[in-house]
Image 1 (cartoon, rainbow, N blue to C red):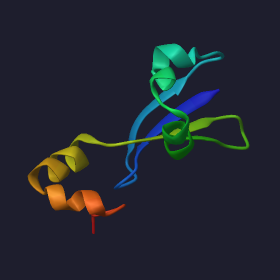
Image 2: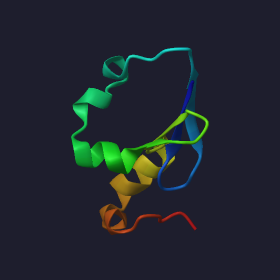
Image 3: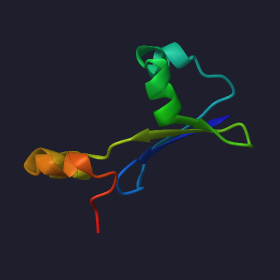
Image 4: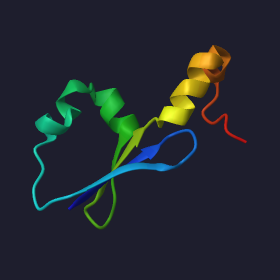
Length: 76
């Protein structure tokens, strides 16, 4: 099983984990409510997990430009 972390704004791969078994509590998935899990975690047909996150560059852009929060994507 593999877990891929991708920035939800620019699409860059932020991280990648590969292991036979994962404890989702150690990954912090238990900290998410059901709506957040639905929005941020996707299981694909190969059994891999895709997690939407935010990269450092996009986080910095949001901090400098708070009005960007209204957009799903703001990177042109």
